[in-house]
Length: 425
Image 1: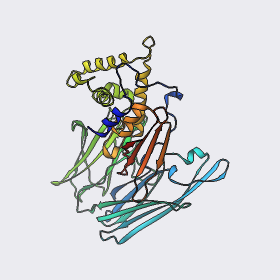
Image 2: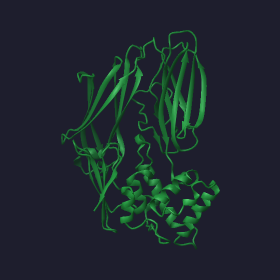
Image 3: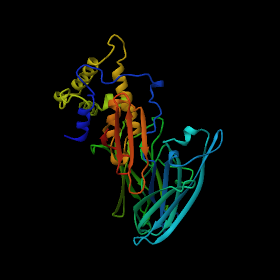
Image 4: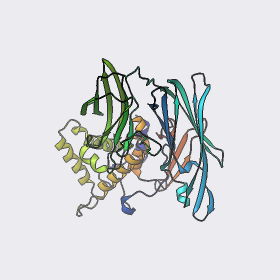
């Protein structure tokens, strides 16, 4: 029996016979109150391209971090300021310093609430042109007022993009269509995750052809999480340029939310090259109801009585839909009205956790996380206590539920925002 099963037996059951397991409550515009749930507070990613001459490898570094990391100083009634320093260093395999850059900046906000924002909104980037090889990247964010530091280290391999090789750059994603080489004015979607239906996810990469007159063949394939081919585009490309930029409108190709992999394949003069990456189109509650029935049943089974859907695992989809509707009808607190308040509240919570707790680096949707399942079961906590990660000490969250007199403690040992259930007090 896993730890979550023990917790759910210890706490009041999420689904108990015909009793209402969610108490619908009033909330503004169907939104959860502003609670400061922890996310990846400081994240970065790197992309490998060629420099403009194809003689050196170019490393592009992008980062995002939240306001809540920094100490803001109140300057006036509507003026709060924080100052920070971002240090990026490249080291060789013997930890010798190769190159580095330091960027100092300040952030100004107009309210105290903004100083505590946990939304990733502060962005920056830098780039290095160095020879190909193996390196270590060290990136450090320093609060200049408190001198507190957050440091991350990553091993990197920079490719040889010289004219002797057929190659493809790293794949990079943008929220909207781009038509030119990425520069400082174009900040990519560094999580490769798209939630807003108004966005136009775009794939960008560069082709580095051999110095031959003959053309090359380009194939772009997109597969879903079950390795099913969703789309394939084949193109014959002239090789008169040293660097060939390419963009693909993913929204016109991918019509449904989910996890996808994209593979770029190149062929020229019997030489081959390829590049792979993943991207994510997030589910909202409506899409999960009608397109992820098995996931919904899995979640309801985990949170409640495992007998409820045991006969429907291999049933045809229409039977699953009928079973799900019967499940909600049985628990409708006001069957005389059109709305099923408990069903609506469940899917509201489901959409919230998928938006806030999904861990894309681990391919883990929000409803499969420990925090997500506790939130769906009990709703938002009365209070949240947090401790950011420090040297030799992981970040943690304590959710306080006044109504059931419980404190639920989560800890993030990975640093990816995967807050796992530790204990109940």
